[in-house]
Every structure is written in C-alpha cells, then in structure tokens.
Amino acid sequence: MKETLQKPWLLVLTIGLGTLLNPLNSSMISVALTRLQHEFSLTFADASWLISIFYLASAAAQPVMGKLSDMFGPKRLFLTGLILVAGAAILAPFSPNYPFLLGCRALMAIGSSTLFPSGMSMVRTNITEGQGKALAALSIFASTSAAFGPSIGGFLIASWDWQSIFIINFPFIVLSFVMAIFILPAKGQGKIELNRIDFSGIALFIVAMIGLILFLLSLENQVHWSALMVFLLAAIGFYFCEKNKREPFIDLVSLKRNPNVTFVYLQFTSINLIYYCYFFGFPTFLQQVRHYSEEHTGLIMLALAGFSVIVAPVAGRMIDRYGSKLPLVIGAFLLLTGTALLLTFQQDSTLLWFIAIMAVLGMSNGFNNISMQTALYEQVKPEETGSASGLFQTSRYLGSILSSCLLGLAFNSHLDIEHLHIIAGVSLVFCILVIVLALRLPGQKLLRSR
Image (cartoon, rainbow, N blue to C red; front, side):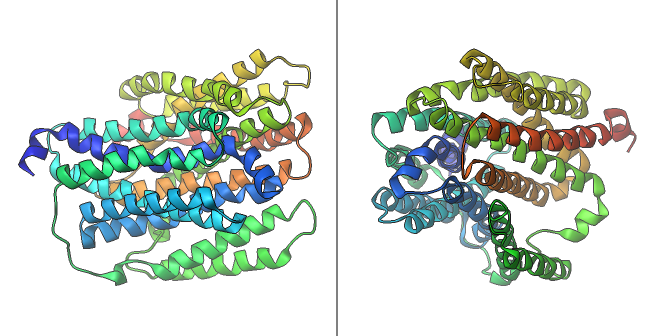
C-alpha cells in the first residue's frame, strides 16, 4: 500500500492496461466483420450482432460490477475481470460456430466491464493529490485504444487472421494481472448485499433491447411484430419496475426531475448512433465496395481516429475558457458538415476526398466526446456524479447498439454507394437533433448564476 501511494503512476498504469481492453475489443471488431462474414457464412445483419452483443453486455454489466466491487473488494474484482477476458480470448479463436463466438464476445464484454468501475474505485480511494490527472490518464487509455482499434485490428488481420484480434489481448492481460497482484492495494470486502443489484430491471432492459434489435433488423424483409410486442411489454415493465426501486438500474425518477440531464443523455445517444455508423460502416464499405485490404483499411481509418485525438486538447482548452456549450455546438455542426459531405461522395470520387470527409467527422468526435462529459457534470450535483457517469456510458452503449441495427438494415442485402448514402441520410436527421439539443443547453453565464 505504501509503495503504491508513493508511486501513484504505477497504480494508474496497472489499471489503465486493464481498462483499455473494453474499448479496444469493441472497436477492433469493425475491420474483422467482413472476414467473419466469410468465415461463418453470415449476412451483415447477422454479423452486426457481434457489435450489439458486446455493447448490450457492457451496458448491463458495468453498474452491477461497480456494486460488486464495493462488496467483494475492487482488487479481487479487477483480477476476476482479467481472468474472464483471458478465458474469452482463449476460447474465441477456436469457435466451432457463430453462436459460440457471440458468447465469447459477451463474456469478454462482461469481464472487461469489471475493470473500469473497480479501477476507478481504487484511484478515488488511494490517490488524493493529482486525482484529476490520474482520471484523465485513464480516459486517455480508453479513448486512444478505442480510436486506434480499427487500425490495430487491420494490421493484425492482414498479418494473421481474425483470431489475432482476440490473441492480442494477452500481453495486456498478463502484464496488468502481474502488476495488479503486487501493486494494487488489497482492500477488505464490504457487506454482501445482493439486494442492492437490480436484477429484475437489468433483465427487463436486456429483453427490451433484444426485442428492439430483432424488430429493427426485420424491417427489411418480413417484419417481426412479435419482437416489437416483446420490446413494448418489457419497456413498460421496466418503467414500472424502476420507478419503485431503491437502487434502480436506471433512475427514471431523477431523470424526470432534471430534464437538462435527460437531454444530455439523448444528445450523447444520438451522437454515438451517428458516429458509430461511420466507425463500423466505413471499414466494411472500404473492404467490400472499394476492395481495400484489412491493412489498408486500418491505415485509412487513422484519419477518423487521428483527427479526433488531435482536436481533443483544443476542445479541452475551449471548455476551460467558455464552458461546454460552444465546443458542443462546433462539434455538432462539424458532424452535420461531415455527414452532408458524405452525400457528395460518389462511385468515381477519390480516396483523398473520402479521407477529408473522415477528417471532418473525426474532428467532430474530438469536440463532442469531452464536451458532452463536461456538459453532464455541469448539470448534476457532485454527489450524483457516480450514477450520472454510469448512465452516460449506458447512453454511449445505446447509441452504438442502434447504429449496428441501422447498419445491419442498410448493408444486409447489398452494399454499395447508394446504401452508404442511406446511412448518411438517416444520420443527417439525427445531426439536426444533435444541433438543436446543443443549442438548447444553458450557457456558462446561466450556469454560474445557478
């Protein structure tokens, strides 16, 4: 314990090596979708479940793991999460069929979702001076691994095959596990209170989301009205279940009390729906329509990631000076501009023009990510930060799940430039919603008066 406190950077490094596994594995799959379609004879709608199942499992697991961390001790949960990710990474390359691979993706999401809440708990408990810098460093681990996941995945698949995107986890797992044993502080477990976990709310949430995904993916051919009915019944049951819970999975009562926070979540969901349509759609388009290799696709995707990373510090300085609203409005208009420019991309357009469009979209992500998080914290009380952050991540997962549904619907039967324009056209509508929500946010002067 003493050594850890003397060298807090070792604590941050150990936790960072673990927490990057969730965003890394959520993004590397984007370049592997085409290869996996051929490997398991899948339609794009089938393959899109690799995206949905990961985010759905992450959305359900993260709040549960945060409470389990309090009960059993964060170090114990952190090590358990690494073991679960290792188990999934071992089994996935030997998947005999597609359902087995989906199960491995779900297990990997659950395991990696254990690492962030337990890691954050240890940082808040053991680092008092420079805690903000420590949390920022963990954020860099997560955002960088997510941004460069497609490029890493592209190089790995080109060098070996799709199995490599699972094997690559082991250097991070082993290093983080060994460091965790010796560096992470061993905290005694708290009181075991399983009644604190909203199992019924989580179950209804999962059933509702699966029903919604099945309904949306069926819109292309024969509509599954039964899936819509399952979604509606589960959603209604979820509402009444959460309304009366002491520690609900999603605190609907507090959302009704603070509409500004609700609109922040809606805006962040919409941003992620748009961005992840491009994040997961572009690699498939580049490979199946433009016939680029996985390696070249990974290189091209650097434009989306690189400009996001470059712009993020500019957005941070702007937030410090003007508050979150101005950079959010800039990010919203950049997202609208990039989406509108995508509609100008034609069959004979050059790769350079496509990269320029990706650069604009990447810059929008650099502005939106950090600004949205700041906007949330401007609207909530300090004691509500933990629960608000959990819902913020749930909003990200919801947007990602909905983007995979839209891609599965548009790219399922045929993938060409017209279908890419369909994605851009639908995204354009959500871009307008994002701009409206950004403009309605209270400015810095109003926040100070409050």
